Amino acid sequence: MPAPNSKHWLDEVKWNNDGLVAAIAQDIHSGRVLMMAWMNRESLALTIREQRAIYWSRSRQALWRKGESSGHVQVLHDIALDCDGDTLLLQVEQIGDIACHTGRQSCFYRGLQDEQWQSREPILKDPDQIYDK
Image (cartoon, rainbow, N blue to C red; front, top):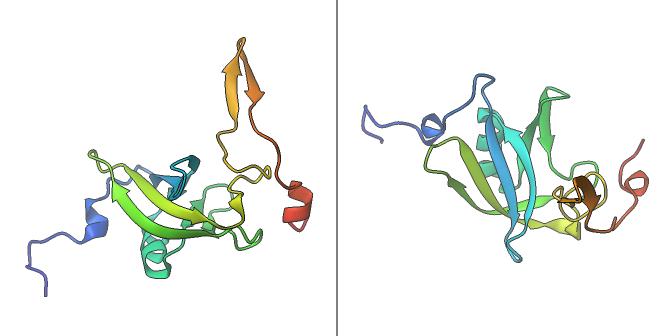
């Protein structure tokens, strides 16, 4: 049993004013940053319990189990909290090699070139074929 003054691990996270923390998903094999999303207490606790990435969708105001509609699940291998306590790094195995809703491997597919954002990687699968519309 924990000591009376010890903090629960979730209490050590610095949640923002909306009760959220930034979560970066990184491919366990390549080291590539796949995406950034938000987590609340419940989604973080469920991520640990289920060993898969579960985020908080700000637009839907609901839990978002990554891959539940696309099949592109992120299997959790490790999780780390940064020095400020306000960002999580998830080491994940990206099932299907697509993390972005645009059908690309990473959400970070655009680079700045000649003062314009340019796509740097191909669409691996048409989003209309991934998601039921």
